[in-house]
Length: 607
Image: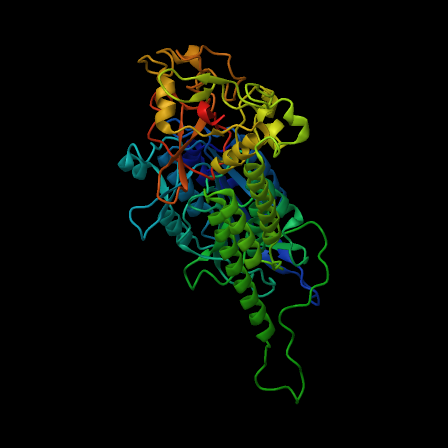
C-alpha cells in the first residue's frame, strides 16, 4: 500500500470549491496545461493534433490518523511525479492528505471542470493506502483509503463510508467527455473492473479513439513498500524509458507494460503492477500518449495511403495476420509467465524438509527452462530458484555431516557450543517456559553479517537499529542461513510465546509497564523513524522494544495457505491505542514496509 502528495501550485481542496470557476475563466492562454500537444507521423507534412489541454490531479495520502500506518515516503514521491508531469505539459493540481469527503469532492470537481473538453487529456494519480474487501469467495472490492478512514477490521461500516471504491472511480471515468483519461494508483487492490494486459501498439490509429486506462502498482494481496519502486519507474518511464518501439512517444499501454516488467523485477516478484482498459466497448479503443523531447526514430505508418489510378481496387486491404499472430504470441507468453510466477510462489512457501525442497526447486527449473522474449522476470525467477536449490542442498549436506561441517571455515571457531558469534542474537531465557527469546529485535548489522546486504529503509539510523523492510519469507531465509552458520536452531516465535514473553510476568498495558514513552518508540516520540535497540526500559524478563520501534513477524498463519502472517508489538509510526492493542492484526507474508522487523526464539534443547 502506498501513497503520494501534491504541492506544485498549491491548490487546497477547500479553496478549489471557490476558485475553480474563476480559474477556468481567467487562466492565461499561455499557462501550463493549455499548450497543444501534436503527433508527428513520418510521411505527413503537418503534425496531427493530439490534445488541446493537459490536466493532472495528483492526490497524496500520508498522515493517516485513524489506525492506518503513516507513509513518510509519500512526500518525496509526490514532488517527483508532479515534476515529470509538468515537464510533459500538464497543469498539475495537488491535493494533500484528503479526508474521505475531500477525496471524493476533489475528483468530482476535477472531472467536471477539466473533463468535459473532448480534445483534452486527463491524468489522475493517487498515492496512499489501497485496500481490498473480500465479502465472499467470488468478489473482491477495491478501495482508495483517505487519511480519516478507520481500519476495516475494526469499523467496516465506517471504512466503507469514508473510502472511495473502484466502482465510484469507474463512474467518474465514464463521466469524462475528454478523449483520453489515465488513472494511476500507487496502491494495491483488486482491479477487476478493467480489462488486463493490453499490448503496446503503434499510435497512429489509436490517438483518435477514446480510452479510459488504469494502472495499479500491485495486486490485491501485494502491499507496496513506502519506498516506492513504482514511483521511481513511473518517472523513468515518462523520461523515455517506456518508449518501447522508439517512436518518440510513450503510450499508456507501453507505460503499463514497462511498469509491469520493471517493478516486478526490481521488487523480486513481491509487487506486480496491473494495467488495462475499462470494460466498455466505447472507451477501450484508444491509447493515452506522452510526447517525448527526444526526436523519434523513423517509424513506418500503420496505414499506407490507398493506391491511385484506374487500377486501384474498389476496396482497400489491410494485412493484419502478422500483427494478430504477434498479439496471440504475447498473450500466450503472458499466461506462461503467470503460471511460472504462481508455481515459484508455491515452492517458495513450502515448509518441507530440505531434501524435498531441493526436489521441488529442481522440478520447477525443469518445468520452466525457456527465456520469455517479452519479460526478463523468467530469468530472474530461474536465478533465484537455482540459488534456493543450492541452499537446500547445503542444508541436506549439513544435516548429514553435522552442522559444523556445513559452516564456512572462518565461522567454525566462533560457533562451538556455548559460544555466541557476533552475528548471533543475544538471547534471554524465559522463566517457566522452555525457550529463549532475542533480547533485542534483530539489528541491521546482524542481518548484514548473515545475508550480506541491508534492505532497511532507515539505513542512516545505524547498525544497532532494527532491520526492517523485510517480508516474512525474507526472515525465514535469514533464519535458514543463521542456523547453518551457528549450528543452532533459531526460529520465529509463535504468537502465544511472544505474548507470554511480552507480559514479563506482570500485567501492564504495554510490554513492561503502563507508560509507553519509557518503554518504546511509537508515533508520538519516534520522530517518524526507527531508533537503536535497547535505548528504552526493558520489560520484566529483560526484553527490549517489545512495544514499538518495529512490528515483529510471528510464526502463526492467518489463512489456510499461509499467505498472511501475524505481526505483534506495534511500531514507530503507530498510535498509543494500536501499540497497546497490538493483536488482531495480520499482514501479507510478502509485505515490505519500513515498520516491520522481527526477533527470534530458540529452544535450548535443540542447541
